[in-house]
Image (cartoon, rainbow, N blue to C red; front, side, top):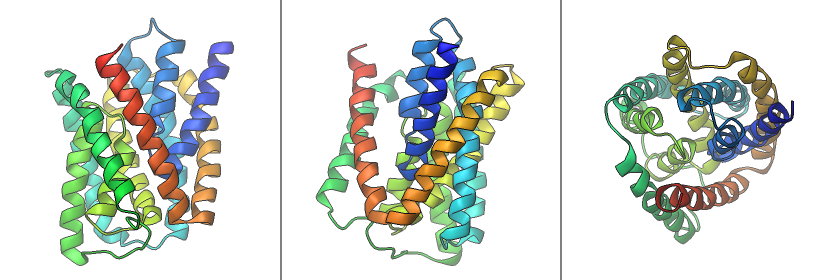
Amino acid sequence: MLELATVALASLLAGFIDAVAGGGGLVLTPALFSTYPAAMPATLMGSNKSAAIWGTGWATLQYVRRVSLPWRNLLPAAVLAALGSFTGAWVLTHVSPEGLRKALPAVLLAVFLYTLAKKDLGREHAPRFSGRAEAMVAGGIALAVGFYDGFFGPGTGSFFVFLFVRVLGYDFLHASATAKLMNLLTNAAAIALFAAKGHVWWHLAGVMAVTNVAGSLLGTRLALKHGAGFVRGVFVLVVGALILKTAFDAFIR
């Protein structure tokens, strides 16, 4: 019972973080692995995503209602994100992600420093593309980050947010809304693979899904209320924490 309460609380916090700036896996994934050390990693990842998709879905719905985005241009990109995630998961069955694990802290550090240096980054919503051009650029981002999510995963939401801000010219609020849509599809693709192989604890995922949605509800409301500046602040904190966590996993553990 204590184990279930622990991961349920972690799922609540993960839902909040993920709804605002991405990176909820920073909380929930370590909680699952430390609480159930004897479980197969694939089973914990499958249970993780099977819970997180509900919070992501709820956040996506709230953003769709309140944030104006060119959804017609972004939906094809979401499909490419799912394709990338499924392909990445398949590649993971053949190739070790160890090299990427060691490179990740440096990549995240570059994102962190760039965001801090560009004080106005993501504060104003000024899309650089429209129509087919926007769909193609968003699709390229979605395919690449989706592949990363399926192959490795940590920081996927944060990478989506950063690239939509830096490349597409979105502010942090619109980028977070778009990232939710992409993450919804990447999670769905990964769940399909994990579930087909029996790597989901549905009883655990069900409880975590309820608390994840509660956290997502709170995070989405705060993001919509306080806008891009608030999302940027949370984004910087999350990426900073991701740098420390991924560096520890790659070089110390």
